[in-house]
Length: 481
Image (tube, rainbow, N blue to C red; front, side, top):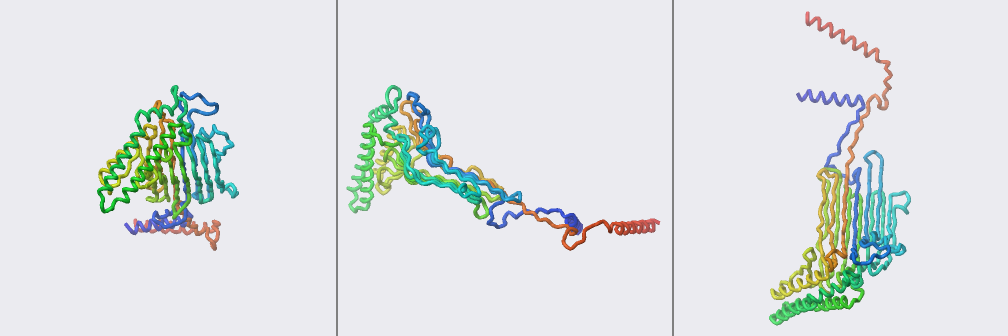
């Protein structure tokens, strides 16, 4: 049986050799290579900051200004295709760095320069493939006042990159915003009335005094001084917090402009699409160094959102991941008290070394701060990142980074008044395919050094065949007879 199979295999090979058939040989899945996949396409996007403002229905219409205003600040995206499957080197690439977009930007004067968008495309002209701009300041108070850093968009054959950054910004002046007329009064009057009714100032001071009292008890019962330094640091923090809160509430009630819903420092967005280690890699990321809520009451440190997608077109060769965490918030001016912000509000981390009494007082302070945020209509939400899809065949992967949202509600009807989003749409996806290796075995008759087949030897071949047939017939008659 094996001999028959070998003969058939030899016959098939001989037939292939004789006819010049093309044989396809697949590349082994585990074959090591650093060349990019024969085909890949990467798509990325990342947005640093989005703000939506929903003006109350009671506000008289303003010429040219819609009731629902939206602005996206600092965004990047990329789309790159590399394709050699058809035997030709076909590439397309576009990288975009966007300063601002949205209905608010459309309503503002164009000479502010907020609509600046850099778009680079793959081209033989270097001026079209790489574009950049320098920093600039843009003031559209009380809605937006920002300083934008440099922008870059680069679209080369195997390198698609864009970036943008915001060095500092002030979004939505709360003192001005709360003076919007609504229901026969102003939002400011409604908020201050709620603050007075709930005695928020008294509650905050009482909660801080409770912490101070607990700390004094710790110090009196610590003759060795082992926890004195830590206790003094916490006391200094809550004292500074008390001053900050009282100044904020005073400014708010006295209608002093300059109290912003959000202040930001050092935000940047980047994206890239390029081959690496025999695979195609898409990256998108947003970073935040500092975000200040309500003029220093809470300071968010170190928010980041990132997504990575990798594919090489081989089984098991795709992966996706995201980075990011719930933001760390500093209370007052010290990092001694830290915590997390999520949909439940502010959660302070305790200081175990100071004992149960101090930590119980800090818990009361946490609840009081959440009450203040609720009275002011400030709500916080964290949306975790996720892996969207990973193809087991290694042909596709996609991931989305985490998002962080701040919503300020209208105290009159509890509808959303201001929505601030960080890291929205931070996604990376990539698809890839490997080429099938083609091996063409030449027909020996067409090879070099052989004579062309002219048909002149056909009579000889025919004569030989006829002799064989006659001989076979003669032998058959002898055997049968």
